[in-house]
Length: 154
Figure (cartoon, rainbow, N blue to C red):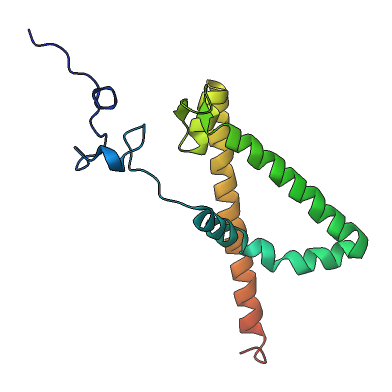
């Protein structure tokens, strides 16, 4: 009877097909080594931030005023910094240097909480996705209605 084969991540072979023998290009999980820098990470953050949030920022500040507007912006900046720090701490479970990597948000939740909380988090993520899609659809339809009802805009 033949001996059972070792899993590819334990035998030193690459997980992805076509990467066999290229250990210099692979990280410790057998995936292609990441080549990002601080500049590429900054570019990704800037492109993620510039969107509908920035477009509505002037309106939000106008509604809150000069005192409460910047105060609320600083409050949410702190909240985002804190949650980003928590998420960065969840990148590797167990040991921060050699622990298992969490490649997705759900991997981080699974490693930290597990069980029914993973399903709850998945349901909340999908509900958020559906809600955002509905919100964009309504906003786009209102904008189109405004343009079609105002000939001076065309």
